[in-house]
Length: 632
Ligand SMILES: Nc1nc2c(ncn2[C@@H]2O[C@H](COP(=O)(O)OP(=O)(O)OP(=O)(O)O)[C@@H](O)[C@H]2O)c(=O)[nH]1
Image (cartoon, rainbow, N blue to C red; front, top):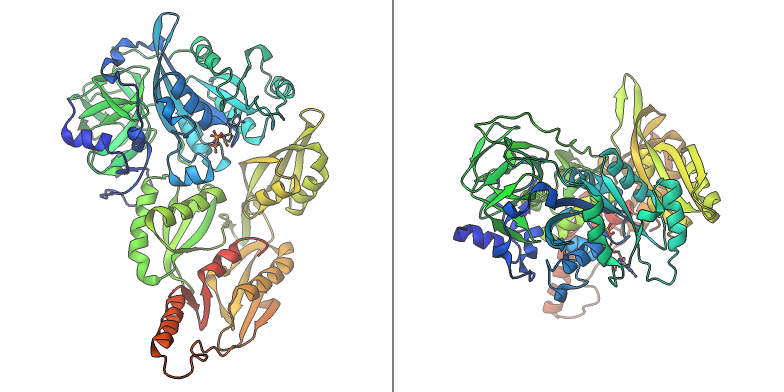
């Protein structure tokens, strides 16, 4: 059966795996990362040996996903389903089994899609139910579409208090476009502020769905959750594959294990995969021998084979992570087939410079970034040198939350101290004109803050496309606006102007000519390239003053005067001065207390290590963070 090395890799409770992707230099040996397989420490139903995928022909398989706006309860419902089907023990109740990254648990958001296979008896027959948990935030919609490609249906979860939100609509359209059967589920009906009847009406009018198919549940208390699995079995079609046909397996996701190499999650569209048989990648033409296959229960559990319609993991002696990409098709080398359509590679939308706090840490940080990008294929990395900050990278992210999560993971999982510069978008140059990326922003909000939101969108150079009422208290807005206006602090502003109630989503809408200029920042007449920003001409006066004032607040006084200037086309817009300070940390240590003097000097030296010299001016890491954030 299972080799001891493979068994160790699949049973090791924490952490030995790295999820892999396309970006970044690959083929590395990686040894510290926690992902889905860490959940193998959870107790599962002690009858695994009895589970034989051969017993589940396509008609007794359901592949489904849960989609929703952020925080509407997907992960909680996923856990409840795992419990209802005895896939995990009730001791794990409310432990958010499928949210496994530290950042996910801390922030209470799902960043990576996770998968679990459950078995449930219904009307005397056993069904194999494959659940894919998906992230809800706009920055991670790439993970949502990937997950949906392995499904025939989904549960669309809507919070009974908040109703339909911007990502409910975005995710609904993703599922609809992929022809999936959508089961609407209203969650959190246990809350005193729940208004399920209002949400039923929204679902009817906005999504044009029949109210008789709507389930009303509390994923937290478990109320009415027992009706979900029968509804999945009754309403979601089974996959249509044929186990006897030539193999066609779609790679849905993949991750790296130090012991066994690449592990891929595959949706077996047709045919069968078995230990010992050969498979070939349509993308690289390379051939491999399968050493193990199995199901995620939710930990990796080996099986004898995987058959058409099933979703499971495959280990095949692939040692170089470069060789696999999500969306690739695997087939039997004896029976070549046409590749499946695959997925679109996600395009980074937001770019920022990333530099080590201490230049000696460059190599260590390079390694950390490589490992992290293996786990996140949507990050784009290019080397960049800044005269102010030294050697570093320009990193492309799907959005600012994605950027924040990346930085947090670098710090938490690799102990890296970094400086990330102000995020910006990718401008294009055509002849002498600059073009900027545009988006179509969708906002759902209570109608009493409509005025405030219209003002916000107009101040961000937005152009109104649509304004309609979802019901008597909620409004839907659509604005075309520059992406650059969205990536800064638009989301925070939206939340604060709507007391947290407005939700927001956006999609790309091409490029447009714009009157853009570069605003430089000078410290004692030296330009700080890392702080220079491209912006619309109409914004420079205010932004120049604000940035100079902010810099004045964060630059600690030095032994000489520091002049801060912001300028456009060599014309100064704003100037601030930080006056000089003569600092002697040991001045108060009269007499011969050498140890105390040394202690203070060492403390000062330690503090200096955390400072970045820009010309003769020193900036602390906090100063950079403060510059990036608003209102500090
Ligand atoms: N009262 C109540 N709270 C719930 C219910 N379902 C989920 N919650 C709570 O709502 C919050 C968000 O739940 P999650 O399951 O993390 O939501 P999610 O949709 O997975 O969030 P993302 O993965 O970040 O998109 C948590 O605090 C849950 O405890 C419910 O039925 N009733």
